[in-house]
Length: 585
Image (spheres, rainbow, N blue to C red):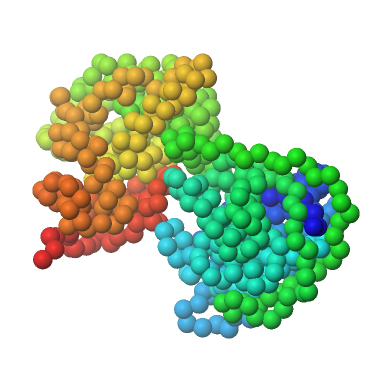
């Protein structure tokens, strides 16, 4: 059987940095060639970054992508790499689509191309366009209608893009009909917790349907709220894993494959009306060569480690890709700000993390001590700025009481953080978690201020679990656990009035988070949640809190998405909305 050495480059691209991304592609191609690769691939839209959102509708950006692709092909040939076929994701436009109602202006396409001998020898667009969750690809792109196949060293390789594997039909069965020996899919599939298990099952299933070895290449890194975890996989025709890349790390999967020899050149229309677009790059098999040892199947991270890595990668990418330097966190001594500080120190290094304790007359001594102890353990920059004088001045002028008095303290802290941000050039990290945001328990222009919310998609029960995991991971490495034990074990409290704890106004978090997951993440209605065993009155109260807090969530900063349905792009509800969940008749 013909041999083929495949190089899957699991890289991080930056949206809009077309020149920088092209340099990365060139560098990784050079390294792949040095390792004897016969076919090199890069992720979905690697040249432009992903997702480009409304940049896809800007003609100048589309043309910059197309021009950069041709330039890249010429540069590869100029460096002596022209004989090495390279598959690159980029932004294209359809030359054939006629303007019509309901179609994106300019007919942009989520596309990939094969570069060979200084030319773009084949280009194709994603056939299945996702339109759920964070994906709006019907808004931005027109679909492709071909089955692209390249013949490389006597092997027919069918090509696909991301959703082409996730949806039934289309290019997968067409690959079998065309008799290809390898199906290569390039992807920019965002991370969600436990998605690696779903992904592996999907790739195995599609390999069996396509009847051939299947390679799934994915992107890593972060883009605004999204994190990409890599996890590239190659399986044989029976679905057995040959090699699997690590999560959350740039890496290369280099694998020698023995594949069926190509038969007659396929042509015509195959499954789902796809037209075969075939190019012969090198018709003859290579002389037999000793294969490299098979790569490892990288160890999977457990659930807590996976989530924590995603939060670190998301924050690091946001800071780096936006040209930022340092971050500022209000340290209360509580679990949320402690976890955010630990994430920030791991993402950026403690020297780039600044913490400030802002005690009021209601702040307990142990909370002040816990904040200082966190700073000592992590090595972050720390100071204390009491808000009591400011608070007293406001109270003398306004005479606030009750909730207004409590919120004033949060708003003074927010103002103080933003003042330090302006003065010293830090960005503020908001410490709110998903449980609080769901119920509206964040003070607008107070604890909700910030440029980024690292834990905004993490429920409170998971906050505790991640804090314990991070401390244990430190112990396992012989290091000092970053989060003081008291921050984990004491009852959560905003400390805005004497003796206050969260359970004064919220149910216990174990119960609350289970209700929220059913309502927010799974879109279950009130009757379904009650039927699952939860108290009728409690469910009604929690759902009312969620429904009336939409205006607050709209004003919260972006933050790393780790669930299947995060607030923002995933869950979009009107602010002005009189619909309320009621018992079914």
